[in-house]
Length: 337
Image (cartoon, rainbow, N blue to C red; front, side):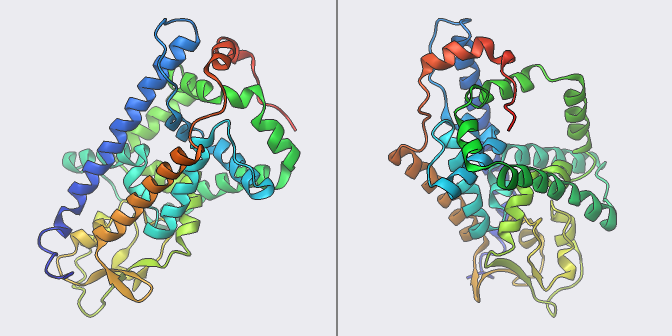
């Protein structure tokens, strides 16, 4: 079955990935627009009330980490930004089932990085980063992750977690994030522009070097039973797998790809010209690459359905409270503990 599908479905994986990524990207833009309309209403700048889209909480990953600790320590769900915690839990589950499938197929930043990479390749301006430099720069995202984990999981006691969730700052965190995008500081705007331009020259610099969220999912993926296995005898050393990998993993030198940078995009399997040379395995069984991708996407949607049905998706904060707080959001500073 695997070999029979090589000439058709496997070659189409990059195209399928682009379609899926763009679908999530457009949905994210739609959610952002809906939240902006809600923000205008809450600020008193529009008479039209647009319901606040819960999925906007996906832009609050640090708050979701705080919610994750609260869930572990107290067993209670963060009902101020429940969708944010649900998205984090879903991403972690997907990382176990489909490597860093959230990064490779769902994340809108990953989608933009992928589009920038493809444009850079067409313009022939993509440059390869030396392996040792790539490893050194990759350590930054783990340092950032360690910083957030140290503060949230080791320095914030349970009562501080509960207090933070109930703070005015946390309630208006979504609006503060919106202002960051609408009116970034000179430094933030400059860094964002630099990373955007760099993405046309270097493959996925943000994802590979700086994203602490991706670092967390990569650590989960390390214990995943799913990996890509290379048949050394069948391999012709063409290195097409290496050149196709958005995480710059030297697949052609691996017997099995277990790297925590693997985003589960299956680009290497698609690029390999030798049928059966690269296979996806879970435990000791070979699985079609698209089956793994489908399982990861299905699991993500199962979390969303569960959250919707169980009441863990929509915030308990009433709209009129947002209407009271948003006009004063610049006056709310981060609470100290």
